[in-house]
Image 1: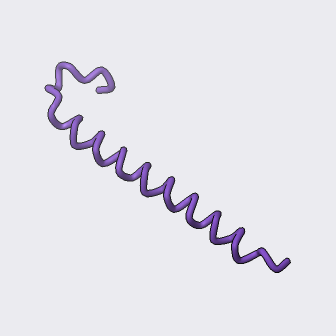
Image 2: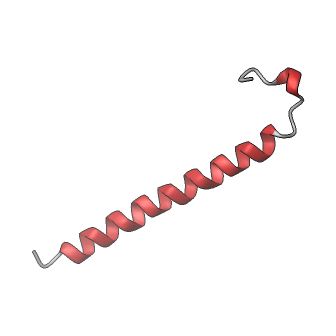
Image 3: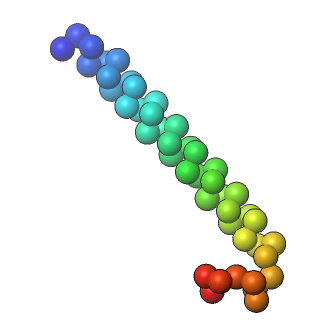
Length: 44
């Protein structure tokens, strides 16, 4: 049980990094999607 701090810190760093990565990808996708003309957007 002496390694609990290391394990918890590893999980926090891992999931925090994934969260930052996902938020960057989503914000970049939203920014790029604004540049596409409405008639070329297949999702609308």
